[in-house]
Image (cartoon, helix red, strand yellow):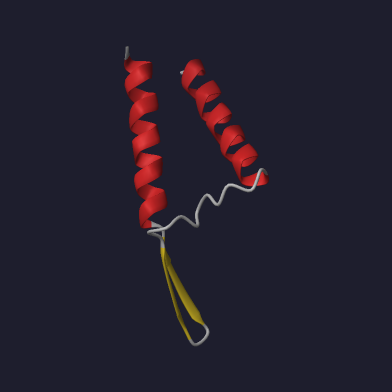
Length: 64
């Protein structure tokens, strides 16, 4: 459990560093934004797929 918590902390810190460096995490091509009047709907499809792939790789490495 301790290793998982450390890894999650490192992943969050890494994502923070990427965002501070200017990587457009959350605004990838494939993310859909719909604006109508004063309402905005945001569907982060590409971001969700990228996060899923990264988590799958990380968890498969941890299981070994």
